[in-house]
Length: 250
Image 1 (cartoon, rainbow, N blue to C red):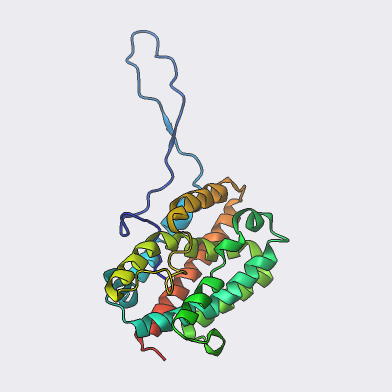
Image 2 (image 1 turned 180 degrees about the vertical axis):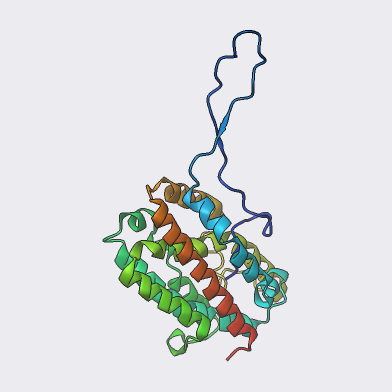
């Protein structure tokens, strides 16, 4: 998993929400010149806060050797398979927490559907590489994500959305990673890469809908703060998983 939130330009800085211009007023009397309409800043959207306030960790994650190797197509299959296993161990727990939260958190019910659950895609990818998912032992990075998901499920289920937001956004860049690895490894099919490219051509429309739905939720500033904090934990977990892979496949 690479934490990209852009499709065409993976390293561009995310922009804040567009300011809303006030309606133009009538010109001043007494011959004074007309002035440009006043620009009124609206409250920041949830997605813009997630992007801006997690950006430092986003950059740190992209700077790691594993992320760079995925983007450049130099990642070995051994390390790729190791990463699949660690992501799977954590995804099983996060998927379960999200599925259970849908019945009690309307915002999660509005945003998360079954097609977004990543564990089935990762399980299929592992099976393609002849790895039994049930034999995988999570290491430090995956454990961090598992502990975070379990803690939020218990104490603040709404914040699970932030963990999911990060991994859904990552699919934009992951499509290009999958394309690169397919080419380098001469594996043209979808098998082995389903978790990187789960939606195919529907990726961008699905992501745009996801963000619009997220931003339509009437979150309080405190709730946005909690989502940002959880999103930062997700990036830390990704960095940890990549670090475990960089330490050598087990």
